Each structure stands twice: as structure tokens, then as C-alpha cells.
Image 1 (spheres, one colour):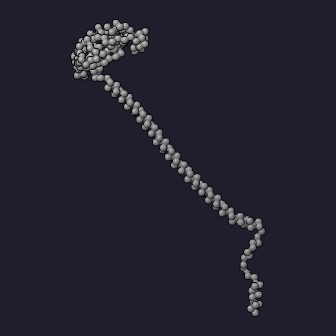
Image 2 (cartoon, one colour; image 1 turned 45 degrees about the vertical axis):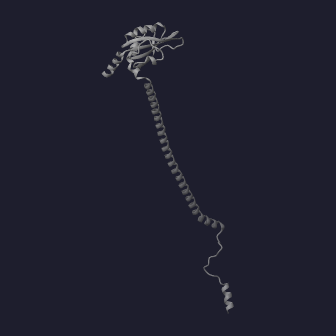
Image 3 (cartoon, rainbow, N blue to C red; image 1 turned 90 degrees about the vertical axis):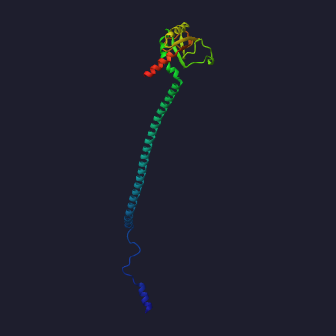
Amino acid sequence: MSVLNRARSRSQVLEGATPRVSLLPPSQRAALKHEKTLPKLLLMIVASAAVAALIAGAGFVTAMFAQQRLDVLDAESNALITQLAEFGEVQQLLSRSQTLTALRQEATGEEVMFIDLRDEIALGLPEGSALVGFSASNGVVDPAAAEAPSLCGPGAAKLTVTIRSAQFAAAADLIDRMSAVTGFECAMATSSTVDASAPPAEGEEALPSSVTTIIELTVNEEARSTRFAAKEAN
């Protein structure tokens, strides 16, 4: 009896079970598969687009910040260039000031003190002559310490005047006219040289030859006292 029941149970078909094999035709199965796959594919496309947009946005933001930084650096560089240019101008002004200071140091106080006498001498220059050199030595000069003996006395100060002219006689004419200079005591020519290639004086025409003469002028206390009185008046 039990054997019969077992055979029956094996031959019975279970009701409500789903068959494992799809009975749909291949076209319908492909359509169903496509319908299931399409949303996933669309989702992947949207996700890829979102990731690409994020990457592009990050790159754009990075480029924007880099451009802003570059603009700042360019502005700082331009400001630095401007400062360097200003420093260059200041350096030029400083160099010019130092040059002027050196020139002022070279101009001794004695020359400045007797500048009025220089103007008087220049007014008495003979025609065709030019004053090309002037120096002064204030105070009494010890004749023993001088390099060469002088026919003029020590005086209160000695002025050295250098003129350039076309003739030797111009120096003698100027020495005669120097007697009218304030505080005049003595004047004499110490040297004369002829230079055929010497350039003409400023404002003068070129000469075939020129004579350069150095004149030593000795003045007394009157020349200095006049200058001191003018300084005190100022």
C-alpha cells in the first residue's frame, strides 16, 4: 500500500508552480530585456554627464582662481616695476646731487669769496680775449713755501687768472686794466703759451692761433673787506 502511494505521489503534478523555461518568443524576450536595461543605461548616462559636469566645473573654478591669482601677480609685478622705475629716478637724482656736492666741494671758499673780483676782471678783458680760468688763494702766502718766487708781495690774497686771446699784447693790456680792480696791489704774467689748435672761446670765432696767458693778481685787505661787508649786509 505504501509503495502504491509513493508511485502516485511521483506522478502527481504540483498545481500553481511557475515553469522554469520561458515560453515567450525570442522577440518578446528581447523587448522585455531591453525595457529592463534601458532605465539602467539612461541612469548611467545621466550619472556620467553629472560626473563630467562636476569635473568641468571643478576645472573651470580652478582655472578661474588661477586667472585671478595671475591677475594679482601681474598687478604686483607692474607695481614693482613702477617702484623700480621710481627708485631709478631717485638714484639718478641722488647721483646728480652727489655730483653737484662734489663740484661744490671742489669750488673753494676763496673762489666764492672773490667772485665779484672775477666779474670785474671779466669786464676789463680786451676785445677778442676770453677768461678761461680763475682760482683764488685766501690768506698770506709764505714766499719761502712757494714753488717759484713772485715779484709781487704776499698781499691779502692771490688770484690766478687765465685768459685766451689772439695776441700777446692782450695780456699786457689786461694787466694795465687790472689796476682798477678793487683792492689791486700787483699783477704780473707768469706764463704764456701758443696753441694753434686750441678751440675758440665760447661765443668767439675760431682763431688761426691763440695765446693762453696765466696772470697772477695780488689784492689787499680792501678786496676781502668789501666782500665781508656785502655778506653782513645780506
